Image (cartoon, rainbow, N blue to C red; front, side):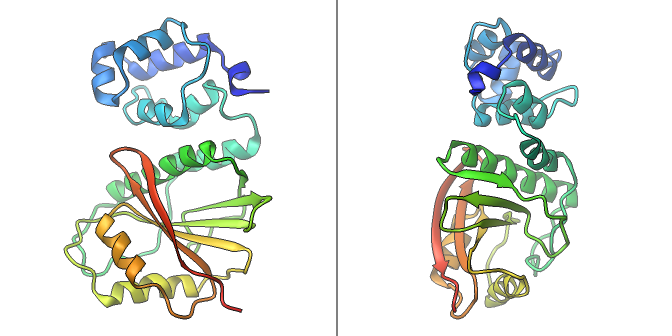
Length: 245
């Protein structure tokens, strides 16, 4: 069944109006970056097709009344399986992250750090929904040493895809020790030849710095990905090294 067939315009309009809260349509449009006319058409049930995951993210990030991205994805018909629910439920749960990367950097409080990591997840989920690949969330119980997000891949070169989020923290410079900790923490993980591991950053300088300094001998299919959190998009992904036999 397609998303369009599963899209209930009435239910979505009720939820969107709840997310808008007591703000005017124009106020909500200014805060979300979605046009007032587009919001109005959804509220009046004039659009047959569901909004994209990217648009839903914009609605969710400024939503009132505890309306979540998960709620909106269900209402739009994008979620139809238990596994989809599992991965999106992670967006509303605390994220465990490693402290390896935070070396001589200005501190960011935990709430802001978790917010940025959640935003990374939402951008990547929207990106994956638009990719012509078959995937499902990995239901392995998370451990502290695990990356931030793991998915299973089907009919692909790889079987698992690990995402390790490294949000920017107003770092003035990156000394060699940062690369030691980044690559060293990856070396401590149990990874197979069929696994893909992607470091995700939102700082263009760090992206190019890591790209210029790939690991020399590391048993991992390692990639570096740059995302733009202002435009909510994946900008670029490049290979750093292939799994060494």
